[in-house]
Image (cartoon, rainbow, N blue to C red; front, side, top):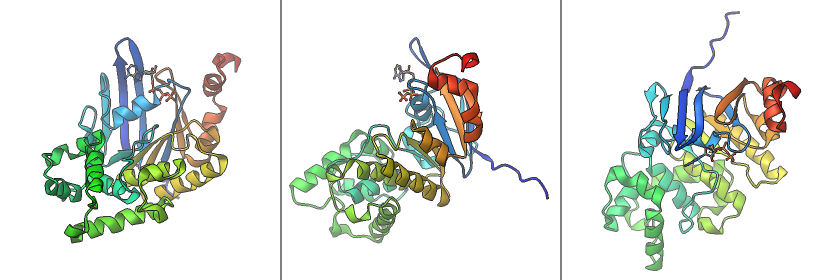
Length: 299
Ligand SMILES: Nc1ncnc2c1ncn2[C@@H]1O[C@H](COP(=O)(O)OP(=O)(O)OP(=O)(O)O)[C@@H](O)[C@H]1O
């Protein structure tokens, strides 16, 4: 039998260093995310995991090094451009538009990717002076949330039926499908702030998926979940991968990480200290030491 070639590297993090003043948050970090895999990024508090996500998604600029997605350089690019290239993320602290419905939150995600713009059209209807390319920033800074609030006060539907275009109908169908995928389609018309904590976390994932990413970065998606919710999340992450999305996962819960990932990268004090399959990483003395807080040779 011919040997199978490993899947190609979709994301390449190449010798990335990030300094914040005197703090070296990332120190020459190297790893790749292969197409179709679920890669776990783990490490003790302050190891640099979130900073790594921030570098990949354009929130932080590397001081040194390169990040390539499908061969294109992303380090230092604007966030909305990185979203358009096909990288989406969720945040450690939920960042939804609380005054918009679940469905509207997902529609905003869809809009961040598409050239034809449902949200853009509505912004024009509401005479908001926002340029198309600034839209992603507006969504990030909560401008849309304010608009939605305003529209609601005057009794208008934010994603109004008055302009029920084909484009909007298709976007709604897609958004509903994503809400179904994450298991909260029955809550589509509910304001995000009225959803339970677990539903809000799922909604964040649906919104990220609406940008049609090739790579989905999940920052501690199980934080605050009980064991049953964690099990469900595990199944959801697998389901997402099975739809063809590659997943990069930051997670503290070792059981969850070991149960769902194909490979794991371990960080400590801004450096990569280990990499391998869950079984390899679990046995690695450096990893055991990092988690137990004892020197590697004593672990
Ligand atoms: N904007 C910033 N300014 C200064 N220091 C920062 C900044 N962001 C992160 N750091 C520092 O960089 C280091 C890595 O932080 P980071 O949040 O990436 O770690 P983490 O592995 O995600 O931790 P946790 O698991 O606690 O979320 C920490 O020492 C942190 O204090």
